Length: 402
Ligand code: GLA
Image (cartoon, rainbow, N blue to C red):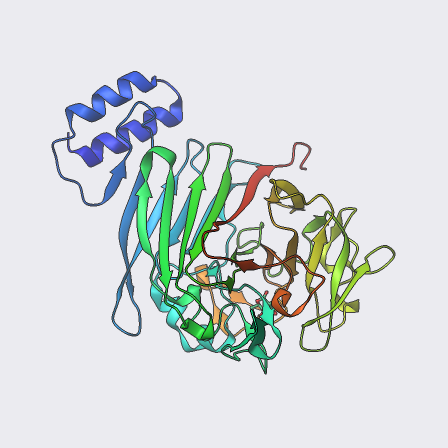
């Protein structure tokens, strides 16, 4: 048997739960002499999963990109490309066990390079850095020096600039024994106007509890703002609905950061109680979306339970499929974005038109414009320190789903 076939057999056997780890490792080592460039399989006694690797297409500049597929014991799948450390696909079961894709994205680089996509800039599934969200007027002062960043969102700076971490190729390293993919990007001093050479890693782990765990680290050689996040859009109906307005959302936040007309915080943290911003009790996204200033939710919530360890930030439930998603994070904030700028110009997976509110994002983060806001938690990383941040998207099916 070829190693690839052995891996598949192992996968199936493991899925059926019919053999133990010891026999897995002995089987695997018998065949380990054969070269296999398409999969990375764990070879120790934890061995059970393979990480598939395939070509994903070229960037406009002609660089090759690669797609990695992680599968867990339940058959859940996570696909990540090294272009922008981007999550392209998340296959999870519904209440009948049927797998469906709950992430907005494309099956090749063509989608991420199309004019419509680049023009509307939705950042589907991408890693966002060096600074997620907005910095007012693309300026901040640090240690007495003013820095000027790319102004790529009106006069403001958004999501790391013109060529942020979502548009670069990361160095990928499959960690098959952890069912994880580690991606590394070294951002040179001065890139997009930021000070310091910043080395960032993002590790995506797919657990057998149907969790996508995202762990970030970063180190720098000069003080710099850092605020890393992931910009996945979800629709838990997996192609069976034309918007996400029926999804029932809970956000564990008593306050949000008030913004001006260009979505820059005024500095005020306002109570959500009694307003359309309150998601402390489960509420459909669409219930009050029309009453939100600016055409929908695009706000940073101040998480009530935040203490730097992983805490539940939000839950989302889609009644038709029965799918649930929980978001846990070490971050103090979460941007709830209800897909307001999706304008129907992008054709997505399965020929679906991604129109307004088709998907939503829950971006864990420090607060927007922190480098200019003295009362917000600091986002400055100093040389010698290590930035660390973790977020979990956990998928399940609600017990009493109809
Ligand atoms: C973030 C921003 C939004 C929008 C999207 C991408 O969520 O807060 O205003 O820019 O990214 O379209």
